[in-house]
Image (tube, rainbow, N blue to C red):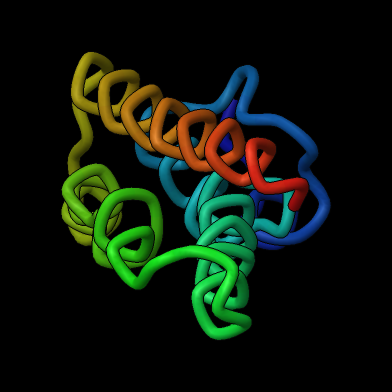
Length: 110
């Protein structure tokens, strides 16, 4: 079933039932998608560095300069056709990066 663009980018809460291309659009543009979660984690890491709580290397290890997985998502978002395995791998890689960053932030109480 083809979902409307507004539903995908604004009202959907999960990518269940979406085709691969729509699922990537959901994750990149919807506030419930993984990209919004990634940006929030990057902002928390940057704030911890700016506050002097952690060294600046955290931005490279866990934050916005750790961009291999996020680049994969951006690459897929720019494509007309998205394969199932490419979507699953890209989303899982970014989800793993978010998990690692959250675990690191938990060690400093953030």
